[in-house]
Image 1 (cartoon, rainbow, N blue to C red):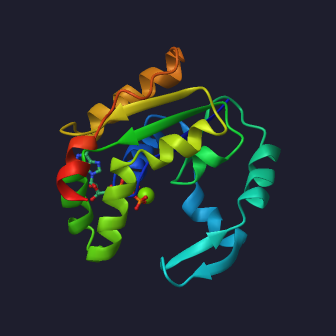
Image 2: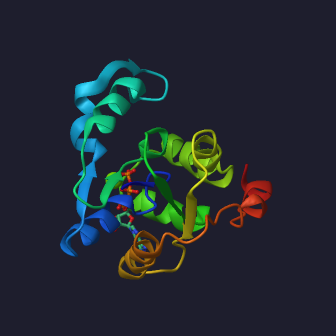
Length: 172
Ligand SMILES: Nc1ncnc2c1ncn2[C@@H]1O[C@H](COP(=O)(O)OP(=O)(O)OP(=O)(O)O)[C@@H](O)[C@H]1O
Ligand SMILES: [Mg+2]
């Protein structure tokens, strides 16, 4: 079973993946393999353009032993059996991205993407089994526990309840 762990930059995907790995889960970090699938560079957005289809072909060929967690902000575009989507209130996300030394424009772009549910919308184009977790005010350990619960139980999908539109009205 392949499970995507996705979310806007700064929501805590990598930190949670680290803890899952410590708990014995098999984790694939897209960051580590993405360079092999770069087909260009978006000057305006200052980001690499990845050949999503080629990356998906690579993922499809993996024969996982048990659960394979595929971590990265493009993982919801891949052929996985379910998608865990980490969310974070834009105010808190802003603090995390400032701490990561991101420039103001990129921070603004990402806060808006989070507030507009962009990843959820894209994930829904391909998947039904989606579970959103609100990480706001939760420790990385707590979020990891919630992720583990989902992986173990595969509960009914749960998404669409998180709503940052108030922030959007006040800030966009
Ligand atoms: N639940 C949390 N509570 C407080 N701080 C957090 C939490 N999760 C992550 N952080 C902090 O936010 C920052 C971003 O976390 P992390 O690098 O895991 O995000 P990411 O989703 O992997 O981002 P990217 O897409 O840029 O790789 C880190 O400094 C991390 O310590
Ligand atoms: Mg990361």
